[in-house]
Image (cartoon, rainbow, N blue to C red; front, top):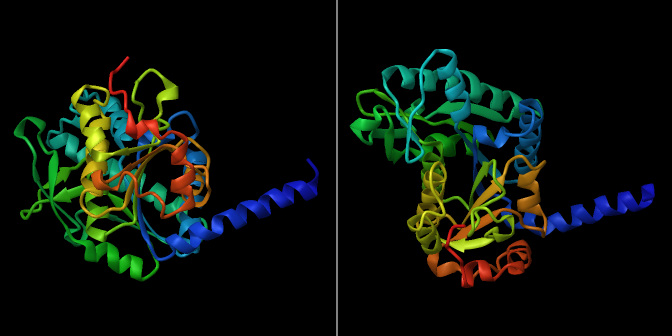
Length: 321
């Protein structure tokens, strides 16, 4: 390929992005960045690429909000400290010592890393936790899980104030109750609740899989578009389980409560956010509300890319292999 041809391709890509830039300018997009998105690549490269995507979104007029977990990092520190890790339905059993470890990792390690990576490109990111300004109020979910919290309320004013001042909020998912007791809260759940509170255009999950499959072992059964009701079926028959349950439940709740689209993307793909938001070639799984399955004409991206596999929604095969 000649230098002129390569330059032409780059120009075409920029032109392709124009309608999406116009559509999403001024829109809030909540991106959940999990530790598992780093699987298979170096932390430095993954963080740098992710930061570039977030800054690009910000510079073209979008209002990105980053919500992060840190499950693998918490597990790694627990292992070094000689503590075992137990999960129930994808939720970490959290005693008093473990919630302290979670706070240490999320607020002291992962949050500053993300903020610093974004701020390489300018003074854009501000790190907060759910404790700050009463952003995330929580209560104990189940005494058997210990200090694992359920979200009882979101104070969107904390995030909206940062967005209005043109900052990128980076949120660590530690919440507290009225007494100040801290709770470790599933980051997938928090991302969904924050997206709902902000009336977000999109909720995006970056993880270490390419999307949801109707047959777990078959890469060819990637579900490109689905509904919240279809996801109910996949959870009920066991196709979706384990750590994906909170993520899927959050997608369902979000699109049923005002968020227009939820996406599950492979965070190991370079610039996956830009590919999903600004090109015609959609990737991963997009979740829409139950009454919105046929209404995907609001962007060319959601019309052309998802139309490649219409049977994913029309005739799902929920039988696991």
